[in-house]
Length: 258
Image (tube, rainbow, N blue to C red):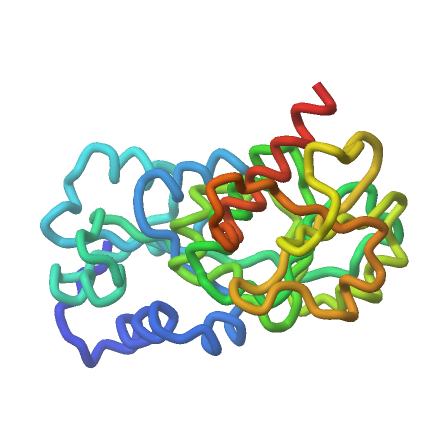
């Protein structure tokens, strides 16, 4: 294992840039997974990290050693604690980070039976939470518009809690055009819809569309939806957090299909 103590080291500089720059993550096709849970989920999905980065003070940790088992020694890197903290980018670093190659975005499937479409979801925590709910609801395909946060950013990955590795994520998707590939209906969540979620039949092939935290869905996407539904809110709130709304909709669909 190589130990790095200098901030001038090229390998540290490259990791620091990946930790702080979405542009660099997109360009390099690489992402950083912070913590045992995410790395374990990635390994369980069949993924092999490009590199494991350990904090110097925790390099002998038994859990870290277990995760490092089977990883080529050349792919193990130890950073002095201050350098590791810069790469980890969290208030309380876990002591282990994995560098992974992100899946190359392929073409959209010709036919999509079930999916979630996300339009301009800009908050990383919301996006990660929706991905987590989508995976938990048994839906495997997610389409992201160009205005969404980058799905493989550290904050989205942490909020997703490993959901990424069970999903086919297509970013920069033309959502209105993708509707033509659906084998079923598109349902849009809207706080202004007349029909409620609990009045709708959610069985059979369908896709969901959820829009921007403030602006909601674009007119172009709403116009091609088969149905718009709202979540009843007897408490009088104007709207729900988009991640909460997505979870409610997806699991009402699960309930109806049970």
